[in-house]
Image (cartoon, rainbow, N blue to C red; front, side, top):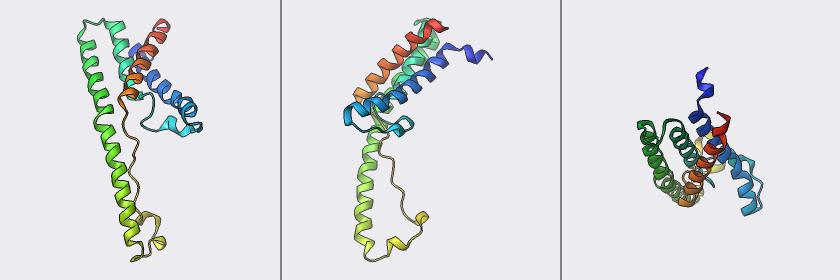
Length: 157
């Protein structure tokens, strides 16, 4: 039952939840589209990956001290996670966009040769997920979100 009083876990989990939920009103303010499903998807502003690791690292720093080995581990883990979110995953999303376009073009080309519409759904291709990673600004605001969440929650523990 001690896990329920573990501040770093609660801070990280709260960072994820807050970052995912806040994406809905942010997207609405920017695009005027109400899209609640964005709370359950990857990508977007702010990065929940960054919010989680920043909240975790901040909470560990508050509990263990910034000179502790646990803080060092969490800080390096956070840097790697944020780098991955803004680099590798963002580029994988760009590749998915290009591949989806190629598949669409290829399908269109061969549509006349084969009757695509008669095929069963399982025979049709599935689009790749394009919103995988984050822009650097989304990662930065995820980091800020995580730090703020940890400081707000700390007095409760």
